[in-house]
Amino acid sequence: MNVSRIAATATAAAVSVLALSGTAFAHVTVQPQGEAAKGGYATVNFKVPNERDQASTVKLEVSMPAEHPLSSVTPQAVPGWKVEITKETLDKPLEVHGKQITEAVTKVTWTSDGSKIEPGYFQQFPVSLGRLPEDADQLVFKAVQTYDNKEVVRWIEAPVEGGEEPEAPAPVLALSAATGDHHGGGSADTAAHDEQDGKDGSHGAEAEQAAAAGDTSDSTARILGGVGIAVGAAGVAFGVLAGRRRA
Image (cartoon, rainbow, N blue to C red; front, side, top):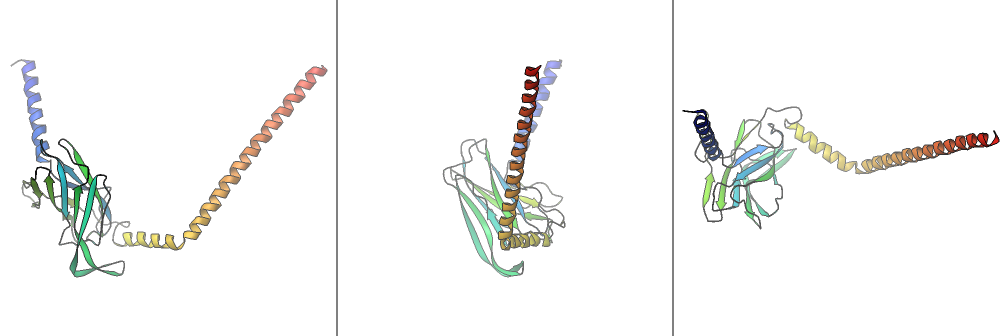
């Protein structure tokens, strides 16, 4: 076999591997923006690829993990998509920041409102989640993808540790270890700071005005200094010219 045939064979094999790997990983996934620490809050992206050549995705339904209810689920607006939030009463209320939460979001649904995920493209749907559980290493979300040809694909199979990847795996969010900034109180501290900022809004405005005044004074001083230098330079030039005329 000559070199050209070997190269052609290698190229074909590489293309086949890429095609197979693309098919294997072309499912709905969830990834955090930054990190998702236990006991904290996180913004995540549900990434939805289009697996069909002759159809476009027009709907996505994501169910929240029932075993770990989340007190806060806030989707970000996505142009061309209408969002619907489904809530249910909790069997056991949650306590967050000293308040009793009796209901939680169980599902978020995005429906095409002018936009579609066409063949060869993907779309991300951002959602803010919290408070994340402290007694779990991951959260499993079940997703249902609907195409405009009425086909429905259910990404709802939870992975099994040590087992093979399911044929239709559900999106899994890995949770990182709690830190001082994210561990329960980290989010509470953030809320406390936000509340304090609201109370001290006037102080913030005064600080901004003082800073603006300081900037104005500094700018004025610089302008006057520049004018002074220019006048001084003009005086020196005039003196030199006068001296030359006398000579």
